[in-house]
Image (cartoon, rainbow, N blue to C red; front, side, top):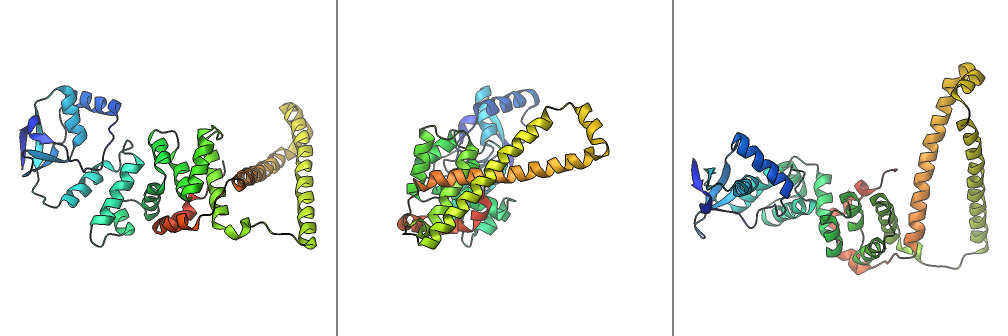
Length: 321
């Protein structure tokens, strides 16, 4: 049933999934409603406890009306009695909006899992047309320390980096947080690499135990060090050769290479691809070297860390950047 209600008769649902509403977006919506009218009525339900009507969906439209100083609003009155079902409908309306925060999503999914009989991550994902992995990674954000959550909410740490941090036990999250506060990360990408490296070391506690090496182990280690360093030294020589090509005029290169230009360009493309992979590995190595100084293996913290989200770990692996 649809009718026009007084704004004073309508109030928000304190348990609705959205908590943050961007002021600029609300002002844009208000301007649109002022120009074109309300395209879709809000949905409300009779509130027998407080009186009046509680918003089921359309709080942004309601707030836009408040900005415009409107005294009435068009509403569809629903008889839906299940508070959880009303919540899910509100989630469905908001979950695709870019201004719904990752934590609002995560808390919404978690509430459904906690309160809906038989709900699983798979069923929640299907309800909102999301992948199972997407929902798992959103839920993983709830494992973050509150200090990190606040930084993510403020936009100081991105969602991808936050997911990597959430995979760590609380002590190691604290180490990442300390480095961030000291300004030791130049970008979110550095946080991703560092947190991922710390997670690998955290999960391989046995490798972190310092043991006396045998003579054979020391010899093998020294040989590996020499080989890797020699290889990297040779790359510097290659760089000098590439610089020489880079300084050569294109017309001169065309005259010199003649019909080989295309093949030589493909050759450099292969070199560039290998360089990207090698650079990625060294960035990971740098992150491992830094993480080794800080990583804390805490079995109790790990046991508390949600196993429900663990099988999404593969999706947290950083990509080359």
